[in-house]
Length: 331
Image 1 (cartoon, one colour):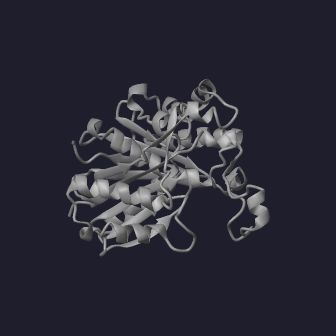
Image 2: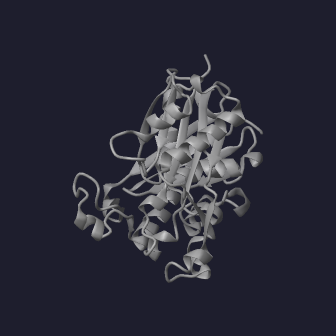
Image 3: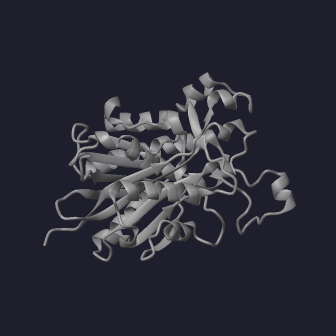
Protein backbone atom coordinates (compact mmCIF):
# COMPACT_ATOMS: atom_id res chain seq x y z
CA UNK A 1 0.00 0.00 0.00
CA UNK A 2 1.33 3.43 -0.98
CA UNK A 3 2.09 5.88 1.80
CA UNK A 4 -0.65 8.45 2.45
CA UNK A 5 0.50 12.06 2.38
CA UNK A 6 -1.59 15.20 2.88
CA UNK A 7 -1.90 17.31 -0.25
CA UNK A 8 -3.44 20.76 -0.69
CA UNK A 9 -6.20 20.32 -3.27
CA UNK A 10 -8.02 23.67 -3.09
CA UNK A 11 -7.47 27.20 -1.79
CA UNK A 12 -9.53 30.31 -1.13
CA UNK A 13 -9.06 33.79 0.27
CA UNK A 14 -10.71 37.03 1.28
CA UNK A 15 -9.49 40.54 2.07
CA UNK A 16 -11.69 43.49 3.11
CA UNK A 17 -12.41 46.31 0.65
CA UNK A 18 -11.05 49.20 2.71
CA UNK A 19 -7.42 50.06 1.84
CA UNK A 20 -5.27 51.69 4.53
CA UNK A 21 -2.39 53.19 2.55
CA UNK A 22 0.87 54.64 3.81
CA UNK A 23 -0.44 58.04 2.78
CA UNK A 24 -3.45 57.67 5.07
CA UNK A 25 -1.19 56.54 7.93
CA UNK A 26 0.81 59.74 7.48
CA UNK A 27 -2.29 61.61 8.68
CA UNK A 28 -2.60 59.43 11.79
CA UNK A 29 0.97 59.13 13.13
CA UNK A 30 4.37 60.68 12.58
CA UNK A 31 5.58 58.55 9.66
CA UNK A 32 5.87 58.64 5.88
CA UNK A 33 5.65 56.34 2.88
CA UNK A 34 9.40 56.27 2.24
CA UNK A 35 10.19 55.31 5.85
CA UNK A 36 7.58 52.52 5.94
CA UNK A 37 8.46 51.13 2.51
CA UNK A 38 12.21 51.09 3.15
CA UNK A 39 11.95 49.32 6.51
CA UNK A 40 9.05 46.94 5.89
CA UNK A 41 8.18 46.75 2.18
CA UNK A 42 4.53 47.60 2.99
CA UNK A 43 2.57 50.05 0.84
CA UNK A 44 -0.99 49.31 1.99
CA UNK A 45 -3.05 46.98 4.11
CA UNK A 46 -6.74 45.97 4.19
CA UNK A 47 -8.94 46.79 7.19
CA UNK A 48 -12.29 45.19 8.11
CA UNK A 49 -14.60 48.15 8.76
CA UNK A 50 -17.99 46.38 8.90
CA UNK A 51 -19.69 47.05 12.21
CA UNK A 52 -19.94 44.03 14.51
CA UNK A 53 -17.83 41.76 12.30
CA UNK A 54 -14.75 39.92 13.57
CA UNK A 55 -12.23 37.33 12.48
CA UNK A 56 -15.01 34.81 11.79
CA UNK A 57 -16.30 37.06 9.01
CA UNK A 58 -12.93 36.92 7.24
CA UNK A 59 -12.67 33.16 7.79
CA UNK A 60 -16.19 32.44 6.51
CA UNK A 61 -15.60 34.52 3.37
CA UNK A 62 -12.28 32.75 2.65
CA UNK A 63 -13.80 29.31 3.22
CA UNK A 64 -16.79 30.11 1.02
CA UNK A 65 -14.41 31.23 -1.72
CA UNK A 66 -12.62 27.85 -1.53
CA UNK A 67 -15.90 25.91 -1.45
CA UNK A 68 -17.17 27.75 -4.52
CA UNK A 69 -13.93 27.40 -6.50
CA UNK A 70 -13.59 23.69 -5.67
CA UNK A 71 -17.32 22.94 -6.09
CA UNK A 72 -17.08 21.28 -2.68
CA UNK A 73 -20.00 20.04 -0.62
CA UNK A 74 -19.20 21.44 2.86
CA UNK A 75 -20.92 18.43 4.45
CA UNK A 76 -17.98 16.33 3.21
CA UNK A 77 -15.52 18.26 5.38
CA UNK A 78 -14.39 16.17 8.36
CA UNK A 79 -12.53 18.80 10.35
CA UNK A 80 -12.11 22.58 10.42
CA UNK A 81 -8.94 23.98 12.00
CA UNK A 82 -9.09 27.72 12.65
CA UNK A 83 -5.61 29.28 12.85
CA UNK A 84 -5.90 32.71 14.45
CA UNK A 85 -4.42 35.08 17.02
CA UNK A 86 -7.58 37.22 17.15
CA UNK A 87 -10.57 34.97 17.94
CA UNK A 88 -14.01 36.57 17.95
CA UNK A 89 -14.25 36.17 21.73
CA UNK A 90 -12.68 34.21 24.60
CA UNK A 91 -13.93 30.71 25.45
CA UNK A 92 -16.30 30.15 22.49
CA UNK A 93 -14.03 28.80 19.74
CA UNK A 94 -14.22 30.84 16.54
CA UNK A 95 -13.62 27.79 14.33
CA UNK A 96 -16.74 26.09 15.67
CA UNK A 97 -18.91 29.04 14.63
CA UNK A 98 -17.19 29.25 11.23
CA UNK A 99 -17.76 25.54 10.53
CA UNK A 100 -21.47 25.90 11.25
CA UNK A 101 -21.82 29.04 9.16
CA UNK A 102 -20.22 27.46 6.07
CA UNK A 103 -22.40 24.37 6.34
CA UNK A 104 -19.68 21.97 7.51
CA UNK A 105 -22.22 20.28 9.76
CA UNK A 106 -20.45 16.91 9.81
CA UNK A 107 -17.10 18.39 10.87
CA UNK A 108 -15.67 19.01 14.31
CA UNK A 109 -13.70 22.22 14.71
CA UNK A 110 -11.31 24.06 16.99
CA UNK A 111 -8.93 27.03 17.14
CA UNK A 112 -5.14 26.85 16.94
CA UNK A 113 -3.09 29.78 18.23
CA UNK A 114 0.65 30.16 17.69
CA UNK A 115 0.75 33.86 16.74
CA UNK A 116 2.12 34.38 13.21
CA UNK A 117 3.07 30.68 13.00
CA UNK A 118 -0.53 29.55 13.55
CA UNK A 119 -1.18 28.58 9.93
CA UNK A 120 2.17 26.82 9.59
CA UNK A 121 1.52 24.77 12.74
CA UNK A 122 -1.99 24.15 11.40
CA UNK A 123 -0.51 22.66 8.24
CA UNK A 124 1.39 20.16 10.37
CA UNK A 125 -1.74 19.30 12.37
CA UNK A 126 -3.99 18.94 9.31
CA UNK A 127 -1.39 16.77 7.61
CA UNK A 128 -1.13 14.44 10.60
CA UNK A 129 -4.91 13.92 10.64
CA UNK A 130 -4.89 13.06 6.93
CA UNK A 131 -1.80 10.82 7.07
CA UNK A 132 -3.35 8.88 9.97
CA UNK A 133 -6.13 7.77 7.65
CA UNK A 134 -8.84 8.96 10.05
CA UNK A 135 -10.08 11.88 7.95
CA UNK A 136 -10.34 12.62 4.22
CA UNK A 137 -11.02 16.35 4.05
CA UNK A 138 -9.48 18.81 6.50
CA UNK A 139 -10.17 22.52 6.02
CA UNK A 140 -7.44 24.74 7.44
CA UNK A 141 -8.32 28.43 7.71
CA UNK A 142 -5.94 31.24 8.65
CA UNK A 143 -7.62 34.55 9.48
CA UNK A 144 -6.94 37.56 11.67
CA UNK A 145 -8.56 40.92 12.29
CA UNK A 146 -5.35 42.54 13.50
CA UNK A 147 -6.94 46.00 13.40
CA UNK A 148 -8.91 44.96 16.51
CA UNK A 149 -5.75 44.81 18.64
CA UNK A 150 -3.67 47.61 17.12
CA UNK A 151 -3.21 51.08 18.61
CA UNK A 152 -3.36 53.49 15.66
CA UNK A 153 -1.41 56.09 17.63
CA UNK A 154 1.55 53.68 17.95
CA UNK A 155 3.64 54.05 14.82
CA UNK A 156 5.79 51.03 15.76
CA UNK A 157 2.89 48.62 15.19
CA UNK A 158 0.12 50.33 13.23
CA UNK A 159 2.19 50.46 10.03
CA UNK A 160 2.73 46.70 10.01
CA UNK A 161 -0.57 44.87 10.37
CA UNK A 162 -3.66 44.30 8.25
CA UNK A 163 -6.76 42.09 8.14
CA UNK A 164 -7.42 39.09 5.90
CA UNK A 165 -8.27 35.41 5.61
CA UNK A 166 -7.19 32.37 3.62
CA UNK A 167 -8.14 28.71 3.51
CA UNK A 168 -6.72 25.45 2.15
CA UNK A 169 -8.21 21.97 1.84
CA UNK A 170 -6.01 18.99 2.70
CA UNK A 171 -6.85 15.56 1.21
CA UNK A 172 -5.07 12.18 1.07
CA UNK A 173 -2.55 11.59 -1.72
CA UNK A 174 -0.73 8.37 -2.65
CA UNK A 175 1.35 9.75 -5.56
CA UNK A 176 3.97 11.43 -3.40
CA UNK A 177 2.55 14.95 -3.47
CA UNK A 178 1.72 17.00 -0.40
CA UNK A 179 3.54 17.60 2.86
CA UNK A 180 6.97 15.93 2.86
CA UNK A 181 8.71 17.21 5.98
CA UNK A 182 8.51 19.79 8.73
CA UNK A 183 10.86 21.44 11.20
CA UNK A 184 8.90 23.35 13.85
CA UNK A 185 10.38 25.19 16.82
CA UNK A 186 9.39 27.35 19.80
CA UNK A 187 11.11 29.22 22.62
CA UNK A 188 9.39 30.92 25.57
CA UNK A 189 12.12 33.56 25.75
CA UNK A 190 10.00 35.50 23.26
CA UNK A 191 7.06 35.98 25.63
CA UNK A 192 8.13 39.49 26.68
CA UNK A 193 8.99 40.86 23.24
CA UNK A 194 5.73 40.45 21.33
CA UNK A 195 2.53 40.32 23.38
CA UNK A 196 -0.68 41.86 24.67
CA UNK A 197 -0.29 42.47 28.41
CA UNK A 198 -3.92 42.53 29.52
CA UNK A 199 -7.10 40.55 28.94
CA UNK A 200 -5.71 37.16 29.91
CA UNK A 201 -5.68 35.27 33.19
CA UNK A 202 -2.59 37.07 34.55
CA UNK A 203 -3.96 40.58 34.09
CA UNK A 204 -7.74 40.54 33.57
CA UNK A 205 -9.44 43.50 31.91
CA UNK A 206 -10.09 46.50 34.14
CA UNK A 207 -10.65 50.22 33.80
CA UNK A 208 -6.95 50.71 34.49
CA UNK A 209 -5.76 48.26 31.80
CA UNK A 210 -7.97 49.96 29.24
CA UNK A 211 -6.69 53.42 30.20
CA UNK A 212 -3.10 52.17 29.96
CA UNK A 213 -3.72 50.75 26.47
CA UNK A 214 -2.62 47.30 27.65
CA UNK A 215 -5.06 45.50 25.34
CA UNK A 216 -3.07 46.45 22.23
CA UNK A 217 -0.12 44.63 20.69
CA UNK A 218 3.29 45.52 22.10
CA UNK A 219 6.35 44.67 20.03
CA UNK A 220 10.04 45.15 20.78
CA UNK A 221 10.79 45.57 17.08
CA UNK A 222 14.57 45.24 17.09
CA UNK A 223 14.60 42.10 19.22
CA UNK A 224 11.80 40.41 17.27
CA UNK A 225 13.49 41.31 13.98
CA UNK A 226 16.78 39.77 15.14
CA UNK A 227 15.17 36.52 16.26
CA UNK A 228 12.94 36.32 13.18
CA UNK A 229 15.81 36.75 10.72
CA UNK A 230 17.93 34.02 12.31
CA UNK A 231 14.98 31.73 13.11
CA UNK A 232 13.28 31.67 9.72
CA UNK A 233 16.57 31.45 7.84
CA UNK A 234 17.87 28.62 10.06
CA UNK A 235 14.83 26.35 9.73
CA UNK A 236 14.49 26.98 5.99
CA UNK A 237 18.12 26.02 5.41
CA UNK A 238 17.76 23.04 7.76
CA UNK A 239 14.76 21.57 5.94
CA UNK A 240 16.55 21.89 2.61
CA UNK A 241 19.56 20.04 4.01
CA UNK A 242 17.43 17.29 5.58
CA UNK A 243 15.74 16.60 2.25
CA UNK A 244 18.85 17.00 0.07
CA UNK A 245 17.33 19.98 -1.74
CA UNK A 246 19.56 22.43 -3.57
CA UNK A 247 18.51 25.96 -4.50
CA UNK A 248 17.71 24.61 -7.97
CA UNK A 249 15.33 22.00 -6.53
CA UNK A 250 13.20 24.59 -4.69
CA UNK A 251 10.58 26.18 -6.92
CA UNK A 252 9.04 28.60 -4.44
CA UNK A 253 9.55 30.12 -1.01
CA UNK A 254 6.22 30.90 0.69
CA UNK A 255 7.32 32.93 3.70
CA UNK A 256 5.35 34.73 6.38
CA UNK A 257 4.86 38.33 5.27
CA UNK A 258 6.02 40.28 8.31
CA UNK A 259 8.89 42.32 6.88
CA UNK A 260 10.47 42.32 3.43
CA UNK A 261 13.97 42.33 4.92
CA UNK A 262 13.25 39.16 6.92
CA UNK A 263 11.97 37.43 3.78
CA UNK A 264 15.03 38.55 1.81
CA UNK A 265 17.38 37.27 4.51
CA UNK A 266 15.66 33.87 4.47
CA UNK A 267 15.84 33.64 0.67
CA UNK A 268 19.52 34.63 0.71
CA UNK A 269 20.36 31.89 3.23
CA UNK A 270 18.57 29.39 0.97
CA UNK A 271 20.42 30.71 -2.08
CA UNK A 272 17.17 31.44 -3.91
CA UNK A 273 16.80 33.92 -6.74
CA UNK A 274 14.29 36.73 -6.25
CA UNK A 275 11.83 35.32 -8.79
CA UNK A 276 11.33 32.21 -6.62
CA UNK A 277 10.18 34.24 -3.61
CA UNK A 278 6.45 34.92 -3.41
CA UNK A 279 5.73 38.43 -2.12
CA UNK A 280 2.49 40.31 -1.44
CA UNK A 281 3.42 42.20 1.73
CA UNK A 282 3.20 45.48 -0.20
CA UNK A 283 -0.55 44.88 -0.70
CA UNK A 284 -1.67 43.48 2.65
CA UNK A 285 0.99 44.08 5.30
CA UNK A 286 1.26 41.42 8.01
CA UNK A 287 -2.07 39.57 8.22
CA UNK A 288 -0.62 37.14 10.80
CA UNK A 289 -2.33 33.74 10.32
CA UNK A 290 -3.55 34.67 6.82
CA UNK A 291 -0.24 35.51 5.12
CA UNK A 292 0.65 32.02 3.84
CA UNK A 293 -2.75 31.11 2.32
CA UNK A 294 -3.10 34.61 0.85
CA UNK A 295 0.21 34.07 -0.94
CA UNK A 296 -0.98 30.74 -2.34
CA UNK A 297 -4.16 32.36 -3.65
CA UNK A 298 -2.42 35.34 -5.21
CA UNK A 299 0.07 33.10 -7.03
CA UNK A 300 -2.08 29.99 -7.61
CA UNK A 301 -1.85 30.32 -11.41
CA UNK A 302 1.96 30.06 -11.22
CA UNK A 303 2.05 26.92 -9.07
CA UNK A 304 2.56 23.69 -11.02
CA UNK A 305 1.99 20.07 -10.07
CA UNK A 306 5.19 18.68 -8.55
CA UNK A 307 6.63 22.06 -7.53
CA UNK A 308 8.80 21.95 -4.41
CA UNK A 309 7.62 24.64 -1.98
CA UNK A 310 9.22 25.71 1.28
CA UNK A 311 6.87 27.40 3.76
CA UNK A 312 8.41 29.40 6.59
CA UNK A 313 7.03 31.52 9.42
CA UNK A 314 7.99 33.25 12.65
CA UNK A 315 5.64 34.47 15.37
CA UNK A 316 5.30 35.72 18.93
CA UNK A 317 6.04 33.43 21.79
CA UNK A 318 8.43 32.73 20.00
CA UNK A 319 7.13 30.21 17.46
CA UNK A 320 8.68 29.41 14.10
CA UNK A 321 9.34 26.69 11.59
CA UNK A 322 9.53 25.49 8.00
CA UNK A 323 7.56 22.95 5.98
CA UNK A 324 8.47 21.23 2.72
CA UNK A 325 5.49 20.48 0.48
CA UNK A 326 5.09 19.15 -3.07
CA UNK A 327 2.29 20.96 -4.90
CA UNK A 328 -0.44 18.59 -6.07
CA UNK A 329 -2.17 20.31 -9.00
CA UNK A 330 -1.85 22.73 -11.89
CA UNK A 331 -4.70 25.19 -12.21
